[in-house]
Image (cartoon, helix red, strand yellow):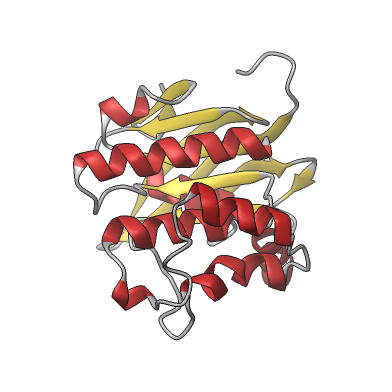
Length: 224
């Protein structure tokens, strides 16, 4: 853990089961995890180990069966749907493998979307993101006119535009070639450091995981 930095995410005793083919299957069996401000943590593990489930619980996209998730002092488990939506809007940045850009909006409007609905649009920071992500010539284009790497840069910029407390990324470079993946992740790491937010990334790539500050492995429903 990053020495001296405050803990932005604390997960303790987290459990989650799903009913499949008439039986309960325990996916998470008591996960404990902490991420500090400014720290990049790679979450690895075999397919089906529950990595995406854990990220979805932290993001408030699903509810845990037991345990506690605390984001910057706010327990997520006690929040209703509206409270979790507000948390995602105001305190979290989310980046997924599928980019999830809004097709009807230009690059510029996609970039500003979350910061505007959060009421924290910062024109100077927006301009810095445009420059750092190399999007200056693409602002009037639409997502369908971009390459995969360009779309992922926009997705990362959108997630960081509101200066979240925590950036969650689920296989964010899974659809990119190796060189583009390296470039996009390097940009993400640099911007995370610039904002001081925590960064938790699910990845199957040991090579990419090794570029972050710390690696943790999810195995048999527990952090190994």
